[in-house]
Length: 265
Image (cartoon, rainbow, N blue to C red; front, side, top):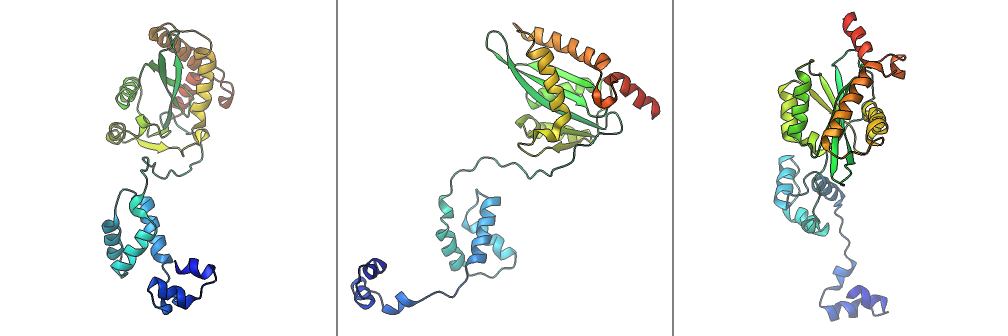
């Protein structure tokens, strides 16, 4: 109110008398620097978006910072943190790791999903799994839905014929983020390597395989049933592993390359 009056060429003294405040309050400038408090509260709001003032102030005190409660509350209200919007579930920070070729079979596997649809428009999903060392296709399993439990079932079927890997590289899909999948990997001493969100080429081996699979199977046929997808996927997987001349393997087929690696061990 005083600011508006001063802008309208009313004297500061008269404006303060009308509003009912002492003129010294108009000229007073706070010497407190609230920037550290602002930075601290914003950092807490980013890390703990569902918490409130009491939790933030308790953390501040436990850190040994002796800021006055009234001061922190004033800044908290100034930042309007009590009216924050809802936040979606945040992904943990993913560290970028170079895409390296494992030197041994079953050292690292990659997994991913593809989507397509039958002739009747019903959607299907395909789980692809490969060995990063030999480029063998370990699974191309199609289903109408693929939950974390079904992913585990596919991995256990593969484990009947070969050893499980030390590491699995995946994206941040809900199936791979599920607690059941994490618990299964931990129980089998498998490290999950999550790629950074929006960086599919950090899982480049499986992305290249998915392109080949899509060109040879999903884009090449019209499917009337899930059984047709599974049958053609199994045929393609067998042919790919036995005969596909993989460029990164000096033209060798994945299965032959894997046998050489195993023989050398």
